[in-house]
Length: 292
Length: 212
Image (tube, rainbow over all chains, first blue to last red; front, side, top):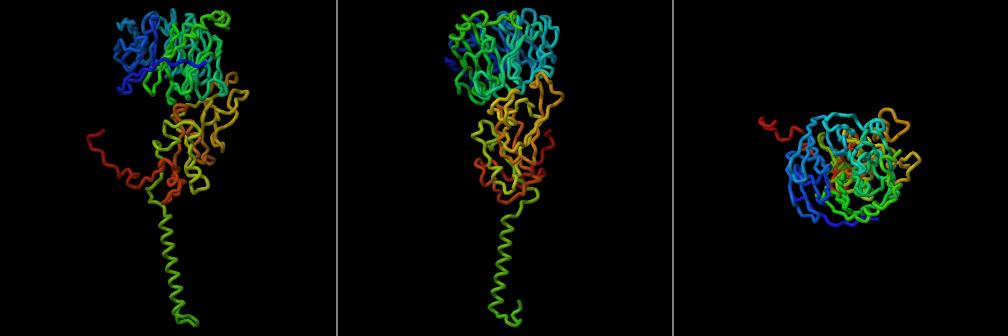
């Protein structure tokens, strides 16, 4: 079933490095946080710009966890309150690599390093605990698209990784254990991942749905944790030259996706799918405990 | 012919001399028409104009094959080349595979994109037998087979690929015709003559000593 586009809003006509929406996050109040250059722009649910949070460095990606923003910049991860007040800096230096994804667990922070094509586990003190998934992907993650996307599962115990070179989504526990995957290359049905390297982005909604973005052509699709396709965007929803779309989804049935060539953010109403996912039979929505 | 020879007339002599003069003139004009350019002249493809290379135009329906069809050589002097520094070494390369063909039991497309099978690939390092997708591949264009049709270039283009494959004029093969057939037919005026003034580095304006 195709998604309903609610609205689009632009990031202005400034220089590309200041108006390109690079990363998205939604909070529990329905506010949308957009990383644009060196600042975070906060939009109310109706699309009105309500706040600008200056970070001072170009933002690589951001997530919301534990009621604060976790913002990756070159060589550091900054913690910032949702009101814009700094809460701390974790300086990882060059060891962090080029961060394109973050997943915050109870005791573990997983950092996606696109430069080394690996997922790194750190404890809260910044101590490196080891790579994640290197036993399954002995040559690192295959990311010709240049970004490695990771998303925390709402169960709090596991995370999802978009592995575009293998055309699948992989699931791991924060402890490093590989839990399984779904997805395959194909071009006949919407449920397949087409092209050289898809999916490029993944977010796990509180409803349990996995939202993924693809490129060439750009589109967004929703899967259950078991790999069943339930929703997708219509052809032409995004600029055909767009790639590595950023996504954010909340519990209220809202999905936001970037349209990079147009420097816009698209807002979709996905409440219908979120409600269905919430009423799914328990055996259709496996928790990390029930995974193989 | 000497008009003094037996049987020769002034009229015959003038007739033969006129024919010879016309022949020399025609040969001169012909030579001038098909002469090659100067040693520094060359034809080149402007990547910002060529529909197969320039960003923004996608899909097999838009592939232009004039470089392959219009060149006077039996196998065009335009060939595809792979810039290995930019290549993603993808397992499922859209320039190598016809990604719209049916998927085989091995999970890969069953057909190759190139109609002349001019692109070959070799696994880099040892292939994981339990997970063949867990590998990188080196893609090489066989220049003896490639005719510059541009299909692979269109498929490798960003955002589907990384744009590592492009079309180039092979200067060791190009005849440097004065009136190039490809340039005459190129719908985007992307086939350009580089004159010696443009092509020669010595013709470029010298850098000032202050510039790095």
